[in-house]
Each structure stands twice: as C-alpha cells, then as structure tokens.
Image (cartoon, rainbow, N blue to C red; front, top):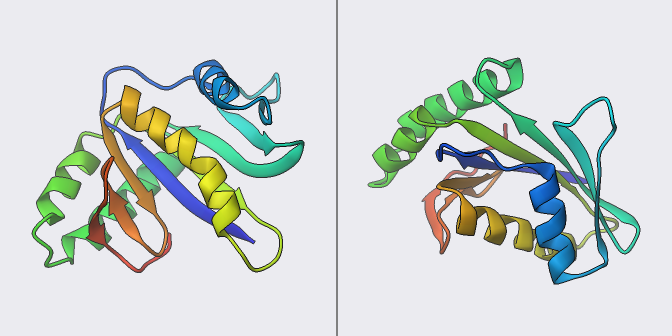
Length: 152
C-alpha cells in the first residue's frame, strides 16, 4: 500500500538529501536514506532495513511539480474554507516540493506514518511551507488547516 504526502517549500533554500539523512540518523540509526548515484533528486527511506518510503524532490519547470501544483491550486480554489487563500498563496510561492510515498505492510498505516513524522518535523523546523497529505488536506507545523478529502 502507498500513500502520498508533499511538503511544499516556499523558502529560498532547498532541502538536500544529505541534510535529511543526517537529521534522521541523529534521531535513530534505524533510519537510512539511499539514493542512486545517477539521480540525486530521488531516494529510498529505510527504517531498520525495511523500505519505508520513496522521496522525490520536484522543482519548478519539471512536469511533476507543475502538474501537482496546478492540480492542487484547482482543488483548493473550489474550497469554501477560510484558510483557502493562505494555501493558495503557499502554492503560488512554491519553490520546491518534497514528495514522499509512504509504504506499509498489512492494514495498519499508523506505524509507517509515525516513522515519517520526523521528516516533516525537520522540514517545518528548517523551511517555510505546508504539508499536503492525500485524502486529508494541508497542514502547518501544528495542525490540519484545510481539509481536503482528495488524492492526486
């Protein structure tokens, strides 16, 4: 089973795999971040040797980034929520997207999602932006700010 989450970065700086690797390993040596030498914008996130997620860095002018941002803007535009404009502003200023597909075995997704939480904590601590979770909506560093029960 897989589940997509995206951290939409609005800061000038961009997260790097080496920084993510170091941050997660400082929390637990069970984390591993492995990327192919020929593609520094992709990696597998491991926990205790098991594949936990795939990480991909998407940037403006690549097809995935542009399509996802446009689709998110269209979805958010239809919302009547008070935070709609805040989310649209973030999408308009997006400089990068850290897209993560989380995997889990069996029926219970919570253990896998909890193991990915330190990544989101680190991104929120170091970069401006919002987290989008398919089927849930948009989160700031503390809570759900715009509920959207759709998947990209």
